[in-house]
Image (cartoon, rainbow, N blue to C red; front, side, top):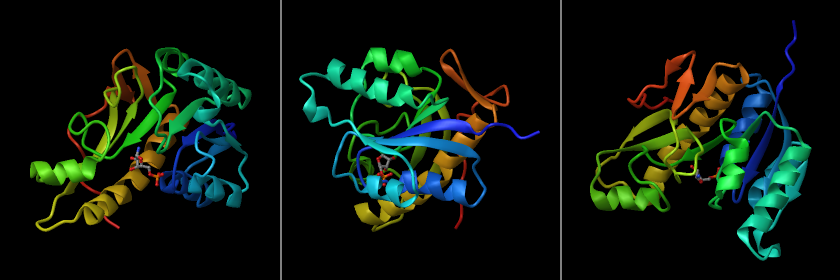
Length: 218
Ligand code: GRF
């Protein structure tokens, strides 16, 4: 039996290394999905080049072309829904999304965030982790809800903060983990193993673990 690969739309705003990790996973057979489109709110996003290089359909829905957020999000939803995705992945998508958008995709919208949520929601996480003197940092993949960076956690990977770490060094080690975590979560969803049950992410019908897993080793 050959299952139809899950149709996926990926939203980006910037350099697109997480998008690249998804593309690479599909190319080397780790991830059987159909990336129907890569959509960016930023026409200059380097990730668009990565998508084009992989032969993927790209679209730009520039938030600056719309007078307000509802207008932008309505256009974004139309562009997404034309591709009929079963899953929408925020891979470095840097716009906060409103309730109608989130309600429309609830349970099929996931995000990758560069911290061990619920710690360090928001921007500039690496610098804030260093300033706080935290010993551990990491990445989280979660279902998106109206609670920004507060949606049900699917998985986290922990990275030790090393003495003398620069923001860049720490960010690079976290990014390596993101590149494993996000394709993994997409694969679980594509395999029908991952779902949102109310306020809880479930993997294989078991509540997703609260403890972060150890970092993947290269
Ligand atoms: C990543 O750190 C991701 O966790 C955050 O934005 C960054 C995007 O990086 N949401 P890239 O565009 O995937 O390289």
